[in-house]
Image 1 (cartoon, helix red, strand yellow):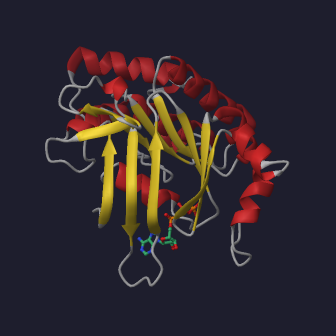
Image 2 (tube, rainbow, N blue to C red):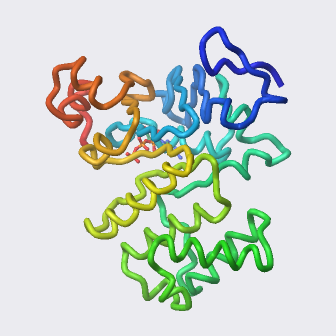
Length: 267
Ligand SMILES: Nc1ncnc2c1ncn2[C@@H]1O[C@H](COP(=O)(O)OP(=O)(O)OP(=O)(O)O)[C@@H](O)[C@H]1O
């Protein structure tokens, strides 16, 4: 593998570099088009996420956030450009990157008739966990999202907020270095949202890199180290929330986001 520039002018070799010296995400000139679509879902899209950073990708519906996350997690085939996660290609056959990455998808990926613990066992086995280690990870992750007391209940009996928390717990099973969350708190009350954010803050303190999308812009402003704004598949703004606002003169991220999107969009 080649050299990946983390700091301009200071390339590091992927083969020998410790994970923490590599960009968590390095995307260059991605172009992605769905079959039958005239407009590109991603249009020369580039961004870099530093290890240990909390990066928020914001944009209106249809801007391209989920498409980028799908590429990042190797869920769709990359058409053009380059993309590396800690120096590794997301869809490399050795699946090494899968051990570095945890995904909390927008759509709940849970089996309703199974209990929370059974769901976790299933997902844990998919990423190669087994035996006592798997049991310990399940206990830890259910406790982390305050579901340990109801782990033996079928998911069909859970509230929406509990399902969201279980979705997060499943993404934490492999102790990922990069946690990717696509609208992790959509449609849940402030209490469950708070719980999820507390857990994410804890993970960040431990060095986990967090990449997330949200429509809760006030929270993104408070939580993220840096924010990128995507519009019609292009990254149109990027920076620390405070400097973005200072630079643009906007009073909030909502206002800033609206200055970047075409009037035909709905938010
Ligand atoms: N499977 C698909 N087939 C065809 N077009 C798609 C598909 N998935 C997404 N698109 C289109 O690609 C563009 C980007 O969609 P994407 O889901 O990445 O946006 P998003 O920013 O995640 O939106 P949201 O905030 O609503 O989740 C949109 O124009 C969308 O209609």
